[in-house]
Amino acid sequence: GESVGLHLPTLSVQEGDNSIINCAYSNSASDYFIWYKQESGKGPQFIIDIRSNMDKRQGQRVTVLLNKTVKHLSLQIAATQPGDSAVYFCAEPGYNQGGKLIFGQGTELSVKP
Amino acid sequence: GAGVSQSPSNKVTEKGKDVELRCDPISGHTALYWYRQSLGQGLEFLIYFQGNSAPDKSGLPSDRFSAERTGGSVSTLTIQRTQQEDSAVYLCASSISGGLDTQYFGPGTRLTVL
Image 1 (cartoon, helix red, strand yellow):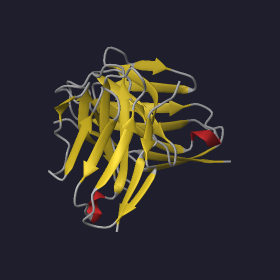
Image 2: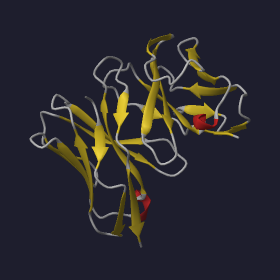
Image 3: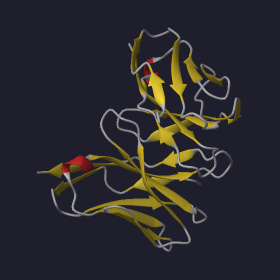
Image 4: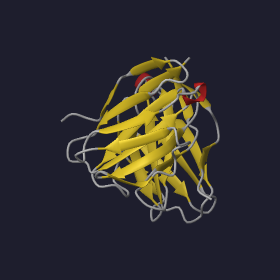
């Protein structure tokens, strides 16, 4: 069935280091994934997305990698900054209609100065 | 331009009372979604609107939950006879026309049922 899950609930990194947040999915037919960032007290904010015809997509300081063989994707944040502290969710659209999003549990990223 | 707005930002109610939560989507967005986020949990889909119609209500947890959208814009989520397990943050999102269009989220309404 459709499900998206995360490996670790929390991640603590030193400012300036790179962060890697992982996500696994179960449906081999899944073909589109989105990463959202949610800061405390705010709604989720779109970061980056990737389609299954790609293995890698880069944004500003962020890179998403997709490994369809093992049904795994990751979000890499380069030179992590205190402003990156947030909960990160991977999500995929439900495939019935409308595009409702199915979210994973989330990984809380904490950046130490 | 303005993003998605929700009101109230916080709502405290007593068990058994009815509550109404409001969402103002981004102007021109035909698709509107409601999600629920319980403490420390991911987001759970509740209902999807395309215009004023709700083709997907599959996430509404019980018949105490209902939602409407008028004028293809503002949406109201109503919870009747609230229970303590309804305590959560209720998030609204809108997108240009649904499907794979990017969803933009509001700040949410934190509901606490005493």
